[in-house]
Length: 448
Length: 156
Image (cartoon, rainbow over all chains, first blue to last red; front, top):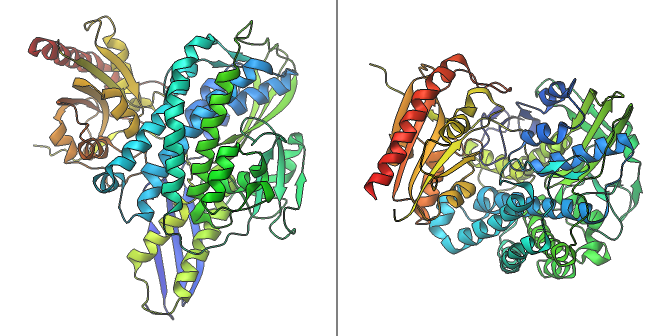
């Protein structure tokens, strides 16, 4: 490669990420001068779509933002509206919500691990190649994913875009015996999840360190999924120097910015670059992992979560995800074991003139919603800050570092193909979920 | 009848004409034998494989984007024809039927018979509702799928 020249890499369609995005990278001499992740479609359209709608509608409408994590959108929306209306949903209804969310964690993380991410470590272009090479592993992944899917189907009414969720709770709650087949399936899933942690832990990980500030919900006693207070570990704050802020102040801390190169907004946390998602959750909540998941994490070389072990190698995020799947399986089993059907499927949520915020831990990171309501429940404003927009700057920085480290290495120069693959890998570490797209068949039709 | 007939409408009803598959499946209710499985999907491969597990015949109803587009035009494709048209990228959103079929093949989970009925899209911008061209084509699309389901039952 010519160290004095300029070279530009353009990845117009990133492969194996959730959604549609592109990357533009410019190298001047031997230095990465510019990395621009360009996201085509943000959830902004949905924010406009929500204005004028009823306060009962955001769970159903926002669930369409992502086909892979609809529950996250439903849960953050419900919490924000319930917060505005002064209602707290707890007891068995809250347990059922967490169970549903566990189903999504299992399904979404497993999709990322097996279909999108693992091929990077095993030298395959895609999951089809991986399936030909390691059929049993891919079958295990699909089986594990299906167990998460089964939870969504049972509680959500259907496997995609669940329809049983409403503000205040559910349209219908299951009788305890209806959940028994799920428990049976989850016991198999526990084995598959444990095997998944061992499988990914044995991958070969490039050396890398990320030093972004970390943001996740913190819910003492629980590994935060569906509730908690925003908590931050600063990159340069000493080990585990943790601070929290009120969710009502979220937009004072997390500020969204318009950048020219992306239609999605980016964000800063107190004017600094930050990361949300599995690495942040693990650092902030690790001590509350289910013992089986904590042991698997230790065995997988992630350090001891009970002692504040953190994972700062973004390539190892796949191991953290696998540990989180195991935790979600255990949590789902725990909830099913203790479940008693609530007397009513939903709490009343009478509207009032107010503003409310809600945040939950989507598989990809903290997902924040805020809604403004009138007396009759008409929405006058909506704000959705998804994890990928928050992570965009951190992802760009990870890409820059990965490429720079390669350029700085002695030995043969990297060609464009190698750098392209490296960029894609650095991006896929974060499982960016861009937005819900259309799914048409692309075809060249010969016309007579 | 030795096995299931599964009809999968693939698409997102909040993306304009991408909702054609789900709309066709809705229009089929009451028009096919009761034990026909009518379902919708976003096309994500693991879910597709689950939906057709154990099925003899799978009918996929899809929206289709053609380079020299003629919105509303109908296409019937075999699984071999679909497998010949990988989308080129492989985000799960572009994880098209071609990749899905390749994965199924690698795992020995291809259905015995798979037919794709597709309609060319005019508009897939965010928002509910089909374009005029696709809406006009919907009855014919639904007829074709219903006929295809009937044939599957007659064969078995």
